[in-house]
Image (cartoon, rainbow, N blue to C red; front, side, top):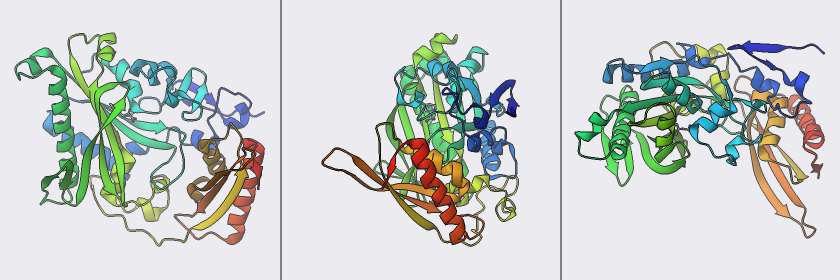
Length: 396
Ligand code: PHE
């Protein structure tokens, strides 16, 4: 067989057509082909524009104190991605169903938090890490198996909170929220100079953008919060954050400190800021997309270049014990690529014999052209064949 491998940051990984039989590798070609594209490093791309605007905020407000990293290799060890940030051994995010494994000890990072420990050990106390992250997931307009995050991390020394009269944890939590609310104001104020921050119950309205803080859980922070923004009639999670677990600081040479961290999803924030309706567009090379953005211009409203109609195909099958929706979505994406817009479960029942049937609706739509019936029927036929052969389900 022809060995095609990609060299990235000194790590070689084999393509799935070669290592498909290797059970410790579940990286398909569609994902493999995204490695190294680094959309966040393109100044004319919405993700690059957003990254640079966030840099501006930190540079201005923290006099260039934050060290910036945007080229750290996305191929990391299981230790970096999970152990170093205290993810429990039995946590679902470690499963082959949720994470892309290159081999049993190596993954495509599922968050930029994978770099916290190494940067702390190197002595950094204020840093921003931007990069592509990878997660097996279902398919819809705000989920894509590759997206981009920016991690922020700030370490405080005792004298910083001691003078304030509150304990270190409360001090860090308060500073964190202030920092991120300031960032939100910076980002959204650029498009609406008459910005007002209003509190209505726990909902904060900034200009026309509604945001709210939600308490949550992460293994690496306590307390932990999420910031959500109201978009396309749903609350969209745009970042997770919190006060760093003491254990992480202790292990990495910061015994007497407290710290906060956040992980911000760049696509979702960019969708709101630029009015980009579908996450697949970020990957488009169509000039009608790429030419609409320019360096330093945050918040230009994207004008859709005619919306082609979606085409829906339903498919029912009896599932087995090992069936997962993520596996189904990977099969569909392997065949239809970015022509698939959404895969949704529309019916689900168990018969008297205990057999469970699922009916999925697949929405096919190109962002760039109209699809022919023949093309869609061809795709759907392959999907049916592969769902049967690869997932071992029985079509009805
Ligand atoms: N790593 C978390 C995620 O990807 C986000 C996060 C980062 C939360 C830092 C807390 C602190 O969802």
